[in-house]
Length: 329
Image (cartoon, rainbow, N blue to C red; front, side, top):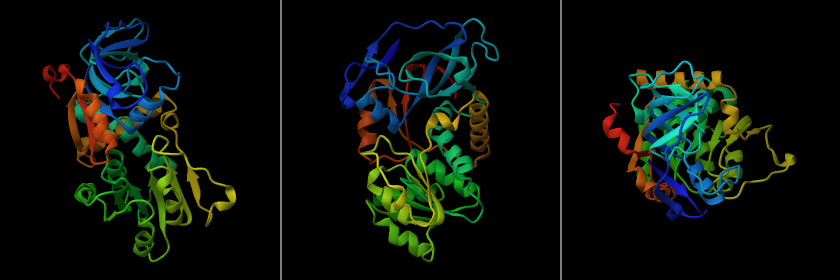
């Protein structure tokens, strides 16, 4: 089987395609032929700094979709040939993977492998952000950084579905159309802190109800200034630059700052199933779309990382394995 292996930490060139032994499913596990794997900014941080357990070499990637080829003992609720997707399972940049059956969710027939793989990490994140961390309400005004990116587009769509007015922020003029396509009511082209004055103007000086900021330290304090009294800042940028620090006395206007960690999005299997089922239903109804910004053969994972880190891409980047050609989406 083919896998992308990181033998040394560093730049995109460390993503090397290798032929590796095929794994066998143990008790409670499933063997899946991967068709599509999602590329996330998290993956670039893991490439540079290593996985949480520090193991090197390793196969990166944490989300994908595919077809079950074999079941380990004790697995119930799945059958060989079922289409499944998963999130936060390392080793997903591969043509085959073994994962706990409890980490997989069924993919409905009407949902493509690309949509399923592309929505697990960023979709569940966006869903958790907008329905639980800050439950967006009808009439809210929210500001979404990187509104043309994979996660930003999903946050924008769900916030609009819940009745919000969305101010999207993008880094380049060529990304404006993508953010508007996702539903942003206003799109600001801004780097650093330039967006604050315009966000305040658009809200008659009051500020926005919530800011979704994955840009890291470069916009952190500016995002606080864009909030209204009792507003909420959702910060989720640990792999983009230095992690900001702040003293409690610096918090203005009774604002709230949240740092939602992915494992808190889906603390139980029931939450994983509920979030993913809701997302799949929204995709099936046309309320949510996964815009694919780039498709790469699995062996070109390094180029996908280069493109993602260039900040020039929009939408979701996907790795396509050889299995996809024999699987009908």
